[in-house]
Image (cartoon, rainbow, N blue to C red; front, top):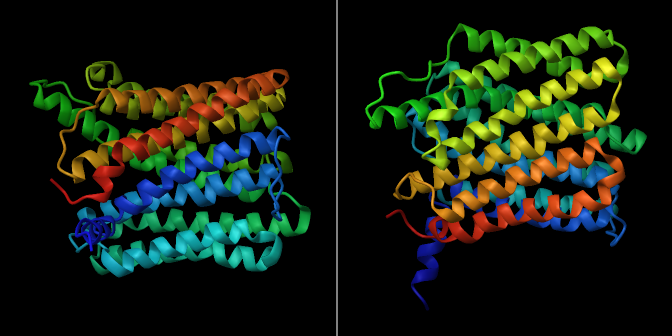
Length: 394
């Protein structure tokens, strides 16, 4: 037997980022490659979900949790000082994620309850593992992470209930976007200024981005209130002008946070710059959502949603995936030209998807290149970084 195969198998489950980054990227590419022609009426899939519902579920509850799982299972040991989850326990978590994807594929036979139960296996297991590790280490500050994951589980449960009752989800999907964005704002506020500061310090700079401060806490609070208002925007809970004002304040606060992190000084290192560019879609989404609330523009609300999902979530996921893979496999923390191409492709995909939302008449023209660029970005990640993920650390 070829001895390289067992070695690769051991390497794949030696750290959480390896299986989830690799197969999460492949899934992100595949699901968009399938969904765009399905949405445009060129193909048809036999599932219990409509094309939009399938796309929403598998983006928010399939792709996103995989990347979150890879990040958390790698980061939590650093936060807690406890050994990482590896080997068979990690393989079991990965298997739970696979079971969820099979559950969606077989949703027509399983029915709403069976599909919901299978797809909830992974997020519940991931939250339990992350929560246990944090509690065992008495690292109470980081309990906010499993708390947000619990909200994501609630959002997924609500999605399935709404899908069963009404044939589509409104609040479940919105709540999921809000939960993921909250994590992105929280982790981005830690990660981006720290990595930028470390890079600048290594080059002799003394003026560094500020660490997480009271201002960041206020910005997070305003952002959370604005996201709650956005989720409930169609229920008449708040006046549209008040909702718009909250979203405008949140977008402004997040833009100020981004300016404080000094993106313009990282132009020489795309690996750092990519984090700033992806985070910029968060304030952009808030500002688009604010205009949607104040003007009644459904197109702007769709553009805000895709700024947050394709831009911020997709872009930040790839920025973290590339950097974490290089760092945890012993490679130099600098972007090669294929890595630059990966980040350029996902940014362009987000821009085209936002443009398609703002100009629905050009959907047939803009959606195919947007989908192709998204799929290309994640497929390139799998091709360029796959060998690093499948082989032991240098």
